[in-house]
Length: 162
Image 1 (cartoon, rainbow, N blue to C red):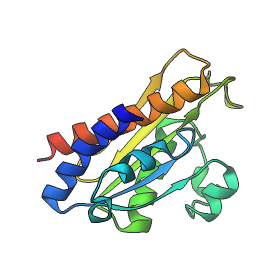
Image 2: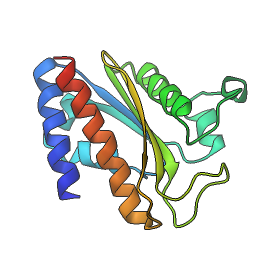
Image 3: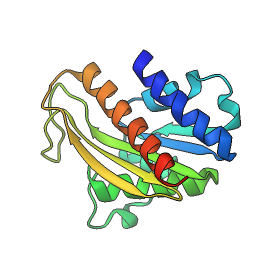
């Protein structure tokens, strides 16, 4: 967790300096992205909220993404990560939205993705989506890897958009 908090500290410094905010929608990272951002003192200055969107029902009710909006999109994909990042950003009126969706393990998901597969989405002044594959079945290690990738990508986007 220490490494995640260090990255979150850099993100926090950038957000505070710009007077910007972030909101997070994560799935297989299980709240680690949010926990790292909230572990940094002063989080109330930049962190608006988050959701662990782990099920279809959570997607429908918490994120207000109906089944119709998922036409042609499957979970654990880059298009879904982009949709989640955009939606959490809109729902909480934040400057930045971060999303993560994947398969932590020890087995893959019902969509055919292996354990260690995750898609990360960033929405804001800078936009990006990426897929990581850890090739590991270690659930906890994958959760940390997913959170690290999301925080690093947010930090990269913040650095580029300055």
